[in-house]
Amino acid sequence: MTDMNRGPYAAEAEERWGSTEEYKQSSSRTKAYTDADWAEIKAELEAIEADFAEALESGVAPDDELALVLAERARSHIDQRYYACSHTMHATLADMYTADERFRAHYDDRRAGLAEYVAAAIKANAAQQSA
Image 1 (spheres, helix red, strand yellow):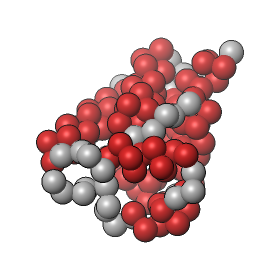
Image 2 (cartoon, rainbow, N blue to C red; image 1 turned 45 degrees about the horizontal axis):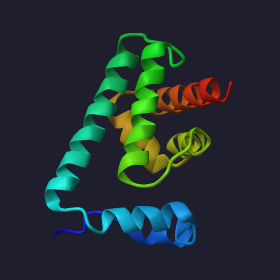
Image 3 (cartoon, rainbow, N blue to C red; image 1 turned 180 degrees about the vertical axis):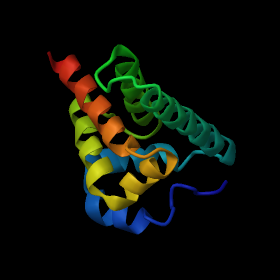
Image 4 (cartoon, rainbow, N blue to C red; image 1 turned 180 degrees about the horizontal axis):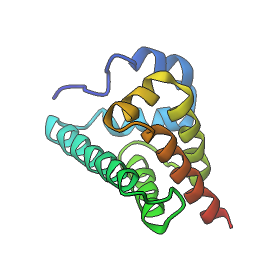
């Protein structure tokens, strides 16, 4: 088994969030993942990000039902694969997607403006869930 969750930012993640319940839950879940599990997780995330990029390119507003469904898929992916991810937590992550240049580049390298779009969709989804 390859411990793929120990990527280039693992030490930073542990330093920043190692004492949180989310980090502990994620570590517990991911330590048992096989190479096949990681490949499946990567494919799931790739599909979500590709669908977000397609929605942006098609002119779908970030608060449109389609974008909200994509945001919920993204939240559920984290919730099922890593740690319990509330809508509030997901909105907090959305802030990181635009504030941290590494996350921004990850999205925007796929499609210009995608980081802001994903963040807006996530926040719209969180707002709808709390209404």
